[in-house]
Length: 218
Ligand SMILES: Cc1ncc(CN)c(N)n1
Image (cartoon, rainbow, N blue to C red; front, side, top):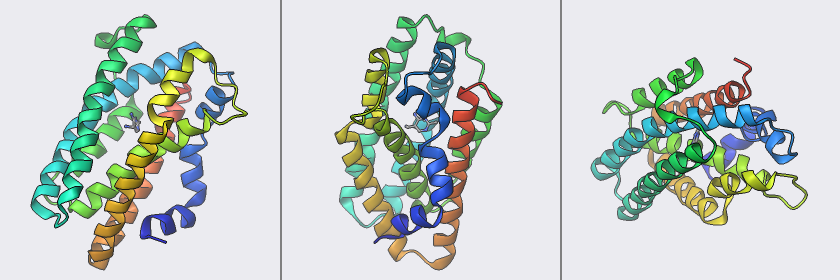
């Protein structure tokens, strides 16, 4: 078992809080109201726009700090997928009558985006940044995969959204990121491993806050 799997077990309450959130339950059981979905859609578009420069910073770190050449391809693939993701948000928003240019970022989103920006610093080690990257993607993969389970009652019009992150290829990509993070953690000094664990926990907290915000609770 790698370090990441150990942390997921150790912090299972928080991990489950982020990946089995009531927002996701409401998608999975079909009780979600359209206003929550639209709020999530607009806010997540803003988040993804901030996520792109974060991933760019991870690319820079992989080039400078990683000794494994295949790491770059995986991260570059993730970056390319974000291009499609932004186009998807625009298409989905126009379909649902959400004007993305009028979205005001919510406080929880601003806090999460600032946290992402803090991780772009050159002072943040590759190991720490790639652990955060894995965690951010893994929360969406695990969450939306629940909405595609056989007994789920996800409404037909939300299936495409769930498939975007819940599909098997995205699952494989998250496993590749986890392997990269695990390998990097194995070689890292104790101080960096501790920092990565803290950043992992912060990601989970921000994800919970993001779902809460999407439900209109904050
Ligand atoms: C808040 C959040 N977390 C993660 C993801 C997956 N890229 C996302 N789109 N938005």
